View 1: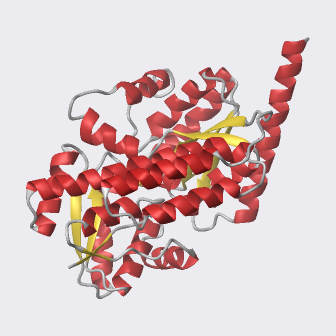
View 2 (view 1 turned 90 degrees about the vertical axis):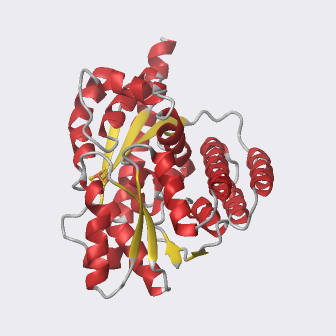
Length: 366
Ligand code: SF4
C-alpha cells in the first residue's frame, strides 16, 4: 500500500510522520501548483468548489507517482464536503486509477474514528497507533505556534522577507524530524530564531483578522499567499482557523463537551445569523464582530466561489461592517483569480484602513 493525502498548508509534515511512523509507505503529492489546479479543474464537475478541484488535483498527481490509497476526512455538515470523496473516487476510477479511499468520519467521535482507521490501515497495536497520533499532534502544534509568531514578526521586520526565510528553514527541518523530542527541539530553536529577527520596535502595524473557509484560509496557494503579502505590507494578521485548534476542538473539547471558543463566536453572530449554515460561515460572522470589539482595523474574508456557507456569511458582513464600523474585504477565490488584481485589492484595502486609523487618531487628539 502507498498512502497519500491532499495538501493543506504544512499539514503534509504531521501526516507524513503519522503514517511513516506506523510503517506505511507515504507518497507526498507535489506542492500545489498551476499544474495541480489545471488537472483538478479538467476532471472536476464545473460547479465544484475550489478545495474539491485542488484536492482532486493532488490525488491525481500522487496517483501518477504510485499512490493507491488516499487518506481523507469525510462527512461533515450540510455543504458539499460530504460528497467529496465519493465523487473523487468515481472520477479516479473512470480515469483508470484503482485507488482506495481511507476515510475518517469527522462528523462525530473523530478521535475514535481516526484510531480505528489507523489500526485497520497499519495493523499496529492501539499503543503504537496512539504514539503515532501523538507525534503528529505535537508537530501540528509546533507548526501552528511558529506560524502565529511569524505573523507578529513579519510586519515589524527590518529586512523584508527575513522572517519568511527563517520560518521556512524551520519548517524544512521539521519535515526531516522523526521523534517528539526532535520536533520540540527544532520548534523551540525556530521560535528563538524568529524572535531574534531584527524588528522596528516603533512600528505599530495595522491589525487584520483573516476569516473564511477552512481550506482556503489554511492553503496559501488558493489566496496567492495573502498572509505573507499583508505581512510584508506592514499588517499584523490574526487567523482563527488552525489545524491544532480544529484537532483540539473536534478530538478533545467535543469529547469532553467543552465548547467555549466556538460558542462565543456563535453567540456574537446571533443577531445576524441565528443558525449554523455549515462550513465556517457562522464563525466568520461572529468572529468579525469579536474582532471589531477587540479593536481590529479590518477583516479579510477568504471564500471559494460557490461556497454556500461563506456566501451566506458574505451577505451578512456589510451590515456587521456598518454596525461595528469595521472594514471588511471579501475575496472570492477560484481558478480564475489572478495575482495582479488580487494584490491591487489588498493594497487598496490596506490604504483604506491605514487612512481610517490616522483619521481616528486625529479625532482622538482633538
Ligand atoms: S465549506 Fe464551501 S468550499 Fe468548503 S467544502 Fe463546503 S461548500 Fe466547498
